[in-house]
Image: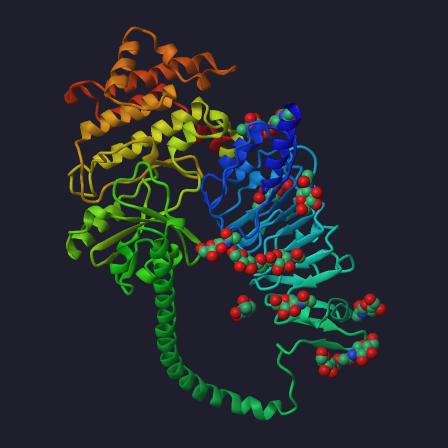
Length: 611
Ligand SMILES: *[C@@H]1O[C@H](CO)[C@@H](O)[C@H](O)[C@H]1NC(C)=O
Ligand SMILES: *[C@@H]1O[C@H](CO)[C@@H](O)[C@H](O)[C@H]1NC(C)=O
Ligand SMILES: *[C@@H]1O[C@H](CO)[C@@H](O)[C@H](O)[C@H]1NC(C)=O
Ligand SMILES: *[C@@H]1O[C@H](CO)[C@@H](O)[C@H](O)[C@H]1NC(C)=O
Ligand SMILES: *[C@@H]1O[C@H](CO)[C@@H](O)[C@H](O)[C@H]1NC(C)=O
Ligand SMILES: *[C@@H]1O[C@H](CO)[C@@H](O)[C@H](O)[C@H]1NC(C)=O
Ligand SMILES: *[C@@H]1O[C@H](CO)[C@@H](O)[C@H](O)[C@H]1NC(C)=O
Ligand SMILES: *[C@@H]1O[C@H](CO)[C@@H](O)[C@H](O)[C@H]1NC(C)=O
Ligand SMILES: *[C@@H]1O[C@H](CO)[C@@H](O)[C@H](O)[C@H]1NC(C)=O
Ligand SMILES: *[C@@H]1O[C@H](CO)[C@@H](O)[C@H](O)[C@H]1NC(C)=O
Ligand SMILES: *[C@@H]1O[C@H](CO)[C@@H](O)[C@H](O)[C@H]1NC(C)=O
Ligand SMILES: *[C@@H]1O[C@H](CO)[C@@H](O)[C@H](O)[C@H]1NC(C)=O
């Protein structure tokens, strides 16, 4: 019987795409969590499984964003190959702090943003191989932490300056920086060229002077259009053809040049006007074609019927960046034709489906389809969206732009990598606050009481701001659907209220106050599934003086300052007030802000700013 079991598990494991060695079930939990937002990833059920060393999933059609910080919790992870997929997003510093990492290949994805490295958690980095080729990274900082690195391939990205710290990588043997737009100087920005065995800096913007012998060593093809580099021969100076050659007939030219320059520039100007027009038209045509292809593909594999009706030429109005000229077609391309792969799993959204996209300039956004606006006329919609765009507050998710394409109306918001408050409170590994995931460089422990208080205060401020109304109008903006999944967390740990209906100005301010009270109950108790009955039960318990039983266990871990418990109870009291049966007994949001502020006068924002 036992043998059978062993045989069975052997059989099972040999089909897993991931190699395993020693048993540890929690590694599988971490893995599933890390790939929660990746479509195409097949969750692996491993109840009695092992520590994960290797993640080898190249060319699997994986789409979406890996939660790298969660993945970084795999304590034995050493080998990662996720190349040739469609992974999006950026990679936070925490991921690189895993000391066991040795080999990482993320080439051919859509990863972007800045690559920020940090010190390894305990000990030194053992990363030897790092391939980030063909992504959309824009910069790399503190790469010198990868002191064991032997191979670095960041070719075909959008990095504009030489990775900071590159020159300190003494063990580097293979370095490919080609096809970026790096401005840098040779040789001082690169590691010692004598130690390198392979180098490619083609298609960049380097300058400086190096010994011509490196041409022989690395080959001429390592320096194709690499910038204006001078190759010094032992006797004479030589340079690449990008530098103008001196001519004997300089005198003649000195006279001719100014005259011809004027004529030439006039000519060029006219030419320019014509060609840019043509190029724009052509560019547009190719985008439109791409959009149509993408949409056709998306329609094939999903129920996305609505896109087919939309007009590709409809302009996108960008509120903060009016110079960014985009059309519906660009949005469609950026959101893979609004197919299922880029659709966000929505819990709280009521307006319609939402999609994730990366716009030109590496702008990560969420595109929301406002189904409730179908029957609105264009001018009405423009007014409504403009009003929405005017709602600017640190605790309101800002509207970046909109696009009106016939019946279809789309809103564009910033994408919040950290997700929503529901996930933050309930879905982190093992249900506990996880410092690795949530604190970047600030060092504060998140999920604890000071952080929760900070978030509560932010939500209260955002809602109070809404209730003040559109600038000047005096008519309050109500939310009508405040739940944890409608509150997003910014990188700065500031909450941002999302899903503010542009049209369905639903409910009343008092209704919002009630919903805020429920959100606060949820944050303080850690309970889920709030309906009227639960609210009433919790209110009853609070009234009976059982408030300490109500508090989330995770808030009462060791080392909680005695004063904090009093503050937490104070917050429960605010919830109690906000959820009063009769609307007129509830405080206003403005009053709530005062109450919450007084409960805990120093918020973490001010304390960390002071330190
Ligand atoms: C991980 O994968 C690499 C390459 O496929 C292999 O050399 C190594 O032995 C694997 N390690 C484990 C622990 O399976
Ligand atoms: C399982 O992993 C945890 C940390 O991820 C580690 O502390 C524990 O020792 C591991 N257990 C086994 C049996 O490897
Ligand atoms: C990338 O994956 C696709 C399938 O998704 C495959 O057709 C292609 O050959 C792969 N390319 C490389 C370089 O592995
Ligand atoms: C990836 O998806 C395409 C179509 O979407 C399919 O043809 C191909 O077989 C998939 N590749 C893999 C490796 O699953
Ligand atoms: C990095 O990955 C790309 C794409 O898969 C591949 O073409 C390239 O050879 C890899 N670079 C190295 C140095 O292995
Ligand atoms: C790089 O690391 C050092 C610590 O070694 C730190 O002081 C510095 O701020 C880091 N730079 C960036 C840009 O993160
Ligand atoms: C290189 O730099 C020059 C001047 O700084 C700039 O005009 C040129 O466009 C750059 N080329 C590339 C490919 O970035
Ligand atoms: C360097 O990169 C360029 C552009 O990708 C390529 O044409 C050239 O062959 C490469 N040179 C070497 C030495 O790999
Ligand atoms: C560069 O110098 C070497 C000797 O060091 C000489 O053989 C070679 O011809 C020179 N090349 C040029 C282009 O002058
Ligand atoms: C270039 O390097 C060669 C050997 O690597 C050396 O003999 C020569 O003197 C160097 N030339 C210059 C100009 O530094
Ligand atoms: C400079 O280099 C080019 C080709 O690299 C060569 O044709 C030319 O003769 C060289 N000139 C000098 C002065 O070394
Ligand atoms: C993640 O790692 C931290 C410390 O490295 C640990 O405290 C936490 O329990 C880990 N989480 C999981 C789910 O393993």
